[in-house]
Image 1 (cartoon, rainbow, N blue to C red):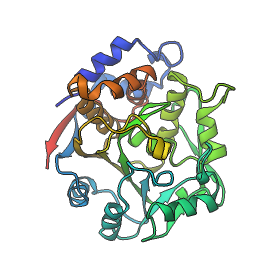
Image 2: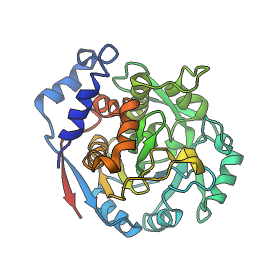
Image 3: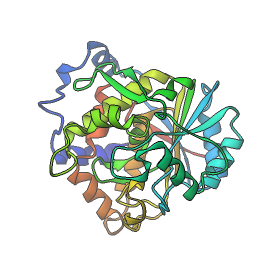
Length: 325
């Protein structure tokens, strides 16, 4: 499987990066890598089975560079959120990965998770009681450099992120009110950023009408993710779970729209762009009666700009081989 379907769709939406991220504006090293076609194909592993056991099998295919103190980045959800990854699944994974810790950050929007105290209460409500959860910004934040960023030169993340040697990004793939879709990129770029540091950097400026929409905020989100992937290098891997795929993010909590897309499986990769492209391809290749709402959400938010800008920043490969496990 390759990403041709969604790239064609992206082109139909228009060149959403022109004017703010023209190809000529990127570092020569990135363009040279593109021109030389280095690593012509990425590998994405796939399991139709959706279970904690399947997640562990897939993790075993991508964990070669993971070690030391390991951060498990999970969106733990708003109170009683119906679509989050089940805590029991993450418990099973954590118990099988030595020196791993679930990590989160407080949020910027109106939520009990705006404060560390309120966040910890929400964790208990949602069943994250089997282990400590490191709220990484509880003691402040720290900057990470963003190589090649046009809008941001650094991103402020929860300070505790610096305590980890590796990161496993465990993501519930779904729609998103601002980004169009939320995958592994959103999970790290927004999910690891401090609320009044990185999250505000990405969402600035906030207007009286609410959050900014469109390519500009998505570019900043990609740049934030670039700072985190650059920090970890080869010591970060990604698992996307395509289950309970609502058009709304898990930050919508109980108000999230009911999923209309069938459960599709689990994807895993060491390549961020490849796993996001593969997730999008699986959604876009469904019949219109199943994917209409999410495709419309993605199009209305210029969501596929995430993929194009990741490619231009050298954050992965949109051409991939899908290997069933």
